[in-house]
Length: 112
Image 1 (cartoon, rainbow, N blue to C red):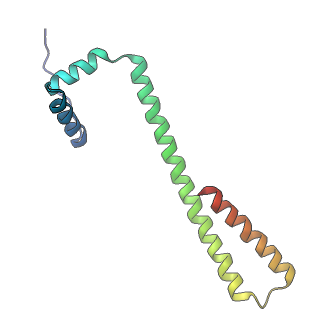
Image 2: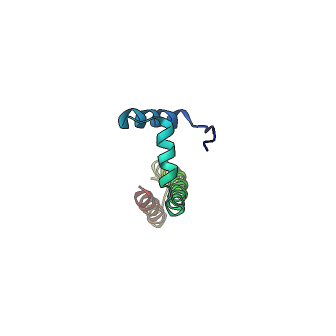
Image 3: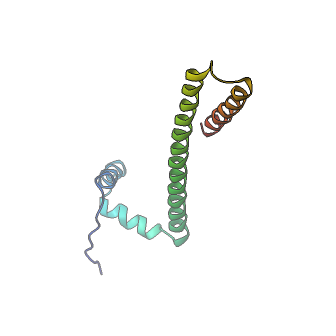
């Protein structure tokens, strides 16, 4: 016995389903039925796990972008300070600032 069900799809999902239907020459309903008939719990768990991994990767990339932005800002501030006060600094102070500059620069390069 068939049951009438309704599924909500995003515009992108609906377009993809339409393209698959046209390409395969079968109805959209038949594609959904075939997917359900051939789906198993292991495959669905793998898909969910991959989606979770993708979200974690995206969160890490956003964090790295934020760190890179802050490091770049700090690097610019150190450079600006050095340019303004290059004649006022002792050799030891310049060495310390150069070390800080190189650490920031190294961190920026690692994030990139």
